[in-house]
Image 1 (tube, helix red, strand yellow):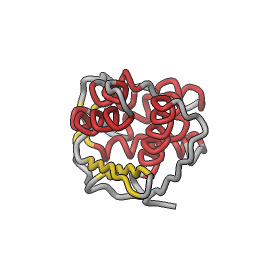
Image 2 (image 1 turned 90 degrees about the vertical axis):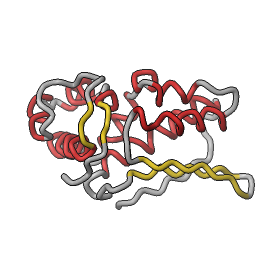
Image 3 (image 1 turned 90 degrees about the horizontal axis):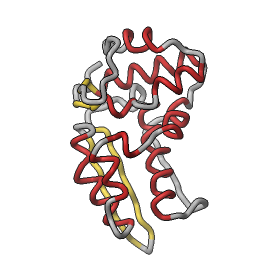
Length: 168
């Protein structure tokens, strides 16, 4: 666990429900990640702890894509300013820019880039100093959450999205 960037536990607000649906006890997951029993949304932990927590949930549930289940259960409003900012603009660009400005309130060590060329928008979300294999479930969850949120903002349920992840 070497990724020490700070993460608000509000990022894990959906964990209890998803773990229960998967039949996985929450307490051993939290203990394995060194988080203890407190999932207080105002508490800050290291991103490596979140990655360990999600890997352990994936392993115990036998669900390698558990990050997608977590993303489907996520509520942007429970992520504080970073999540609420997604819905704060008049345009999609304003919403994305607001989220980008507020992401440090949710987690540190995140680099976000929004670029446009040839009529296409490219969103790059990078977890700095993170091992792609260790953060795999977190990366998948972030990608799925951002796509779902972009679809909700734009009203484009079937939009053409392409996702590249830093792992298989």
